[in-house]
Structure formats: C-alpha cells, structure tokens
Image 1 (cartoon, rainbow over the protein chains, first blue to last red):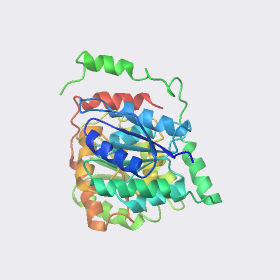
Image 2 (cartoon, each protein chain N blue to C red; image 1 turned 180 degrees about the horizontal axis):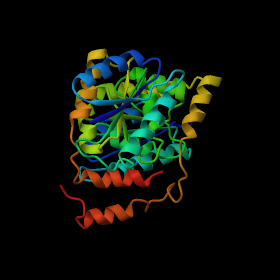
Image 3 (cartoon, chains in turn green, red; image 1 turned 45 degrees about the vertical axis):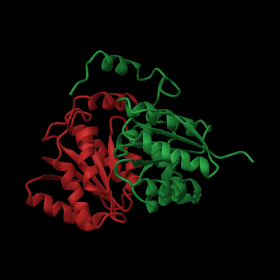
Image 4 (cartoon, rainbow over the protein chains, first blue to last red; image 1 turned 90 degrees about the vertical axis):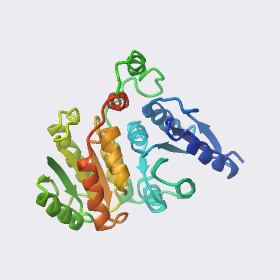
Length: 175
Length: 150
C-alpha cells in the first residue's frame, strides 16, 4: 500500500518542534516531505508556507502542516496559495471542524503556543478526519475559493521572493 | 483607535459585550454586522473595510484601525479573510498570540471563536491585540513577501 504523504514546513523559530512532529508522522506510517527550513538560521516563513501548501494543492501530498512561533505568519502565507484551505488552530476540535466542514487541507499551529503533544494530537485528528460533503459545505468552500485573486508567476516559482531576499542580504530590513 | 468589528449569529452576543467594553475604554467602533451574514461575509466585510482605512494594511501605526471578527470557530473566518490580497489575519485563542501577531505580523485583523474561547478570554485576547504595537524592522521583509502573494 502506498503511504499517505504529508507536506510539512516551518520557520527557524520552531525547527526542533517540526522535526518532532515529522518523526511522529513517520512512526505512524506516513511519508513526510519536509520543505524546510532545516536549521535555526534566521529565515522567512512565507518561503516555507508557500512551498508546503503548493505540494498539497499539486497533489504531491494529501495534507500540509505548517508551524512558526504563533502559526500566524506561515499560515497566512500558505493561505495565499490557490486552492489551499488553511486552518490555524490551538486545539483538536477546531482542526476536526475545519476538516469536516471546510475540507481544510493545511493545518497550522503555533510551535511556541501549543505543546508538542497537543500539536501531534491536532495533526493526527486533522489527517484522519474525513470531509463531510453536503451542499451547504460545498457552497461555503466555493465562496471561500472565489475570494482568491489572480496569481501570475506565483505557483511553483522558486524565485518569487528573490527580490526581498536580496534586499534582506543588502541590509535594507533591520531592527 | 478605530476598531472595525463584525460577527455572525454565533458571535453576535460576544461581539455586543466586547463593543460595550471597548467603547467604555475609548475605542471608536465601526460595527459591520448585518443580519443573515455567514462567517465568510463577515470576514470579507471587516477585511475590506480595514484594508480601505489602512491603505491596504500599510498603516501599522499605533492608532491605525484594526479588524476583529467573531463567529463560532474563528478558524473558518480566518481561512476566508486570508484569501484576500494584503490581508494578514490571525485566529487567536490566547493573549500571547494576540499580542505577538500585531507585534511581528502586523496583523490587520484577528478572528475569535465563541465555541473556542469563553467571554472573558475573548475580551482579553481582543485587548491584547489592540494594545500591541507593530515592531517593524526585520519583520517587514516577511510581510512584504506575503503581500506579494495574491
């Protein structure tokens, strides 16, 4: 039997937490695509939110899991991928609701907000809960999808953020 | 500071309580709630109005308007709002996230779910968000990246 594939990504703040979730998923028999970041070197969450969600909407992975400090940065980035339906949650109930009602395909948590065992429980529930297809649920999803703008040159473009990384390296952005 | 607020039927009571308290504290309130709106309608109404009043989120000053949506789950309105360009929306159920998302993400708006947080925590999260400044600096590169996405 082929393994269900989970796409996972994080920023440098919670790399260790992501690795623990990734290990957990592998132990449970899932295949994990780890989109980075892979260390604690300062980087930028949109890169990983975009990559992780794109693997889901392309069909390479069944579900996505994204983490940053509060989960907000990486989830709002993932949400701007066409056909990604991202749920930022802090408990199992919200994750279950988002799967059942909205067919959410990416779950986000704050790695500094939610404890690692609860994160694992949230992810487990998210990826094992089936979408309940009803006319009402379908109408809501259609309404949410209709909010998306045109995405010229965005999808699959690994150089989409280059201009900002260049400015970052040049010291344009500083505290 | 102006707070642009909206609730569907599941968030109406909590929204009214919050509005009362925020008014007492001197906040200016624009309540966009209308009968018959679902969470997508409310999220979009609050997001669009807050974008309009902040020059697409560019104004992140201490007095810049901010948006709050209250429905049953929070995470659904969050899903809808973040589909709009220039919207950075946070679904929160704790004060620390509420504060940090303004400081680091410059979040334009937050969502709160009445099935998730009790009435006191809901008010406390809203205030933590409204009272937090935006840190700017290095955080701006990430916001510029998100804003390039459609």
